[in-house]
Image 1 (cartoon, rainbow, N blue to C red):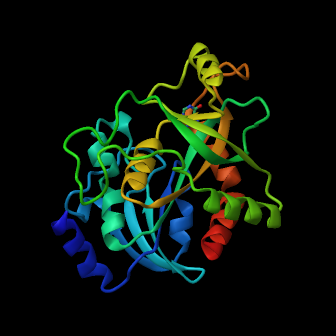
Image 2 (cartoon, rainbow, N blue to C red):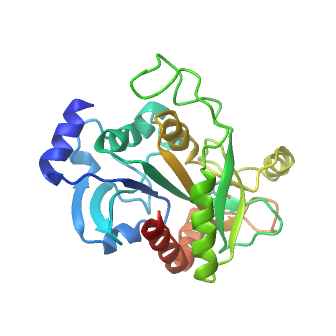
Amino acid sequence: MSETIDYIKSIIDNFEPEIGLVLGSGLGELADEVNGKRIPYCEIPGFENSTVQGHKGSLVFAKVNGKKCVFMQGRYHFYEGHTLQKITFPIRVMKELGVKTLILTNAAGGINPNFKGGNLMLITDHINMLGTNPLIGMNNDTFGPRFPDMSEVYKKRLRDIAKQQAHILNIDLKEGVYVASSGPSYETPAEVKMLAILGADACGMSTVPEAIIANHCGIDVLGISCITNMAAGIENKPLCHEEVVEQANKIKSDFKNLILSIIENI
Ligand code: HPA
């Protein structure tokens, strides 16, 4: 960890980010448009290379709407074969750099029948169906407790700001529970039915590990899903990654405007 922090600080000087953002599939463009310092993951000691189409791997440090931010342009996924510890390492790096608030974004399949492709969903809570947890192993007490409370991972204070800004921008922001499973295969229709019964409104393959690690070390989390498609079996058509990226592209202007106003008002 200290090698990573020393390397990053040697590039960003005294820039101390207060807000961290993780940009999901097809949503990385926001970080292209900000003026700041970019460090490719492949140059950062301790970071893995990201392998997914539509995900660029860089940390971007920039002042946005008066707030010092660090963007993860591209994230790591469990299905790439990384351990959950590797996937979430950048979140602990953010903590060490001074981040207090983390905005997690993702592309997700809609399970709630009131959703449609193109909606944005504020994450109220999550269900971890990864079958594992990034905190398994020796607890690092400098980051947080062995048995962290998970009663309010996605902070109400931040959700209220998001809802207020969506209202001002006239964006129909849905709300719901996000469930993460490992992927990379999409869910079967039977699994989607099960997830609906379990109380999930949207399903995806990310976000939960980062939220667990952020919550553990006392970073406040806000989560926003782009509903890029309805989950398998809800509409009578097959799912494909190209469609997910295409739909994310269509939502991106609303998405960017919402994120920028949230940043301004945190
Ligand atoms: N399922 C899982 N992950 C996803 C989906 C989906 O339907 N859409 C985008 N990411």
